[in-house]
Every structure is written in C-alpha cells, then in structure tokens.
Length: 317
Ligand code: NAD
Image (cartoon, rainbow, N blue to C red; front, side, top):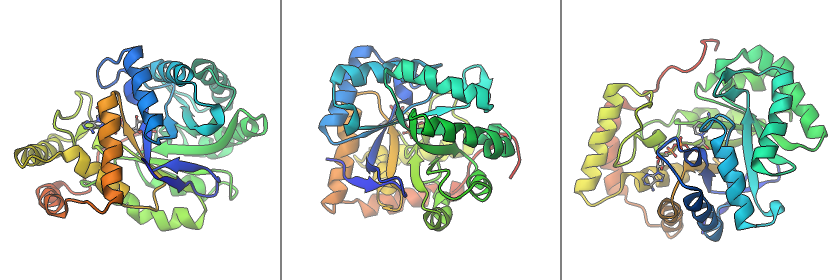
C-alpha cells in the first residue's frame, strides 16, 4: 500500500505514489475506457488517493476519461484528491482571469464533479509571470471562495518560476507547487528549492520520476524534448539494468520516493500492471529493500548528463 504524506499547510494527506492521468489522454499510446477504469480501480485498491490531470492532456481526453473512471469505480468523493489545471490548452496558453474562470467549469463538467481539490496554473513559464501574480491567482482565489476549488497551485519546468511567484503573492495564497523532471536519478535540482518551499508552508508535488519515459525500457515518446545525448545516456542506463535483470523504472521511482519532503511522486500510469509495479516499488522501500548497488552503477552512467534539462517557455527568470 502507498503511504500517506502531508501536503504543505493544506491538511491534505496524499499517497506517496500519485496517479498521473496524462496517459489516460492517450498521450503515451492509446488507452481504452475499460483499461482506464481497471487502472483507476487498482490504484484505489492499492492505496493511491491522488489523481492529477489537465485540460491539456490529450486535448481534454484525460479529464473526460479520468472522470468516467472515477465515477465507474464509485469511491466516495471525499476519499480522494483530484487536481487539474488551467491556462494551458490544445489551442495554446491563456492565463487571463476570464479564461481560467471559464476553464474550471469546463473541467468540472468533464470530470463529473462539483469541485476539485487543487487547481494549478499549468506551465506558467509560457505565460507572463506578472500576469500569474496579478491576475490569474486572484481569479483562482475567487474560485476558492466559490467552493469550486480547495487549493491553488502553480506548475512548470524552470525552477526559478516558483520563487518568482511565491515572493510576490501574499503568504498562503499559493498552496502547492508541481515540479516535474527535476527529482529523479538523472536530475535532482528540485532539492535546492525545498528549504525555501518548506519555509513558506508550500506543498511539494514532484512529477515524472521516469523523466517522461526517459527512464523506462521502452524509451521516451517521440515528442520528448530531451537532447539526443540525454536520451542516449538514459537508454544506455535502461539497457544496462535490463541486462542485469533489473527494472530502471522501479529504480527511478524508488529514488524519487526516498525524499520525504516531497509529498507525492506523480507517475503517469495507464495499466493495472503499471499501478501494481509502482505501488510494489513503494512497498519494497518501506520494507527497507533498495538496490543501492544498481543505483550507484546507473548514477555513474548518467553522471555526464546529470541535471541536464531542456528549455521551456519564455525566458523571464
Ligand atoms: P512519467 O515520468 O511518470 O512517465 C510516464 C511514462 O512511463 C508513461 O509512458 C507510463 O506508461 C510509463 N510507466 C509508468 N509506470 C511504469 C513502469 N512501472 N514501468 C515502465 N513504464 C512505466 O511522466 P509523466 O506521465 O509525464 O508524469 C507523471 C504525471 O505528472 C503526468 O501524468 C501528469 O499528471 C503530471 N505532470 C505534470 C506536469 C505539469 O504540470 N507541467 C508535467 C509533467 C507531468
């Protein structure tokens, strides 16, 4: 069973393994409704209580499929936590108060719910950070007052965006941040930001422990933005693990789960098998089973590309 961890000052307790629902939008290959329902059912059975989606994933498909699956499984609404996002759409970015206010109603309809627990401004480095501070977040506060959302978050790739916004909003306004691809074997740069986030009482969600497919045997999807050098190093590491009879994805997820200052590790899942593997990785860790030897070998392979990332958004910070 996945363990529960507190999320900043929100009072929420999230499962250490969080369910990333972008794959339910068929962004990592097609997923049928039946598979999606079975996957979500298995997630609940194994103690996962946190589900993350966005109108952007699969051009609204992820929200629709997640909503359908949650309804089909039928767990009471107050027993799980849902986060979705606003400001990023298939059509492009729009962080205006008007758009995000409309966006939540569209998301709630697709998800078939009355409220979401967390609404996050999605990939804010693509918008004006000053607009996020002065317009988007105040609009989200109104949605909070209206009871459509319980907490407010911001997400994105460059780590500088988080302190830029948090330094400029009143304390307690932004409840959580979601960082991705910055806390796994190949990139641990999120670590440096954690003391600052803790001092502000902001909850930390870290996504993409498999680096969006880089740290998997089958490799990343075609759209993956990593450099050829980073992709090649990760594939070398994956092949090395396979040869040793080890699973690089398990190693990567366990690495991320070990940092307890991070409330939840959001991993994208699209099959019952993946849910089982990922929760089992957590359970093994709790029992003190960790393959330090293979981890050290993989870290050595990835050393030349350690903390290498890719550009994202408009340069502002
Ligand atoms: P990830 O690193 O979690 O990798 C997902 C890929 O790995 C998928 O192809 C999945 O099918 C596969 N996978 C999952 N478990 C596996 C296992 N045990 N063995 C082999 N392969 C496995 O990347 P992700 O899905 O992009 O990120 C996780 C979630 O975090 C997303 O679904 C989304 O909810 C969230 N996220 C948010 C942002 C943002 O807000 N900007 C960015 C990235 C991710």
